[in-house]
Structure formats: C-alpha cells, structure tokens
Amino acid sequence: VQYFQKIAERIMDTGVSVRKRVIKIIRDLYISRCDFAKRTDALVRILTRINDEETSIQVKSCFYLYVSESYVYKRIFTN
Image 1 (cartoon, rainbow, N blue to C red):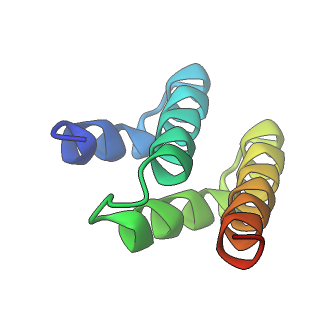
Image 2 (image 1 turned 180 degrees about the vertical axis):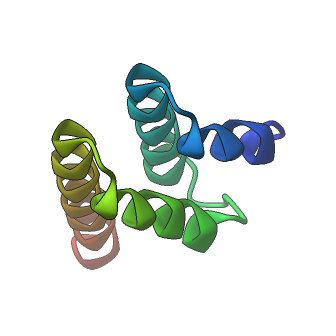
C-alpha cells in the first residue's frame, strides 16, 4: 500500500509484462484492502488500460474490472 504510487506509475511502462503485472497488483490491492484510500485511483488506472495497444492488456483490464466490481458487490450485499 505504501508503494502504490510507484507501482501505479509503471502501468504506463513500455514492457507488456510489466503492465500486466502492475494491473494484477493494483487489482489485488483493490480487492484485499477495503480501507485502501486510493480505491478510485486504482480502478481509474486499470480502466485507462482498456485502450492499451496490446490486446492482451485490454482483455485483462476488462476482466479485472469485472471481477473486482463483482467481488465488491457480493461483499456489500451479501453481509
């Protein structure tokens, strides 16, 4: 959490594998930490990658957004 800003900056990296890993880390932070202060920033950063030039990043971003929102929705409305 304390390194979020540094990690999130790498979402614009030229390396595809770096961008994929950053998306996964941000998604994991979003899901695992309800008290995470930068939740909106995390989702916005993933959302911006939907327009990535790499198709696999576009798909991963869409999938992670869907999974993240589904998970949060379940946690809110099933308790």
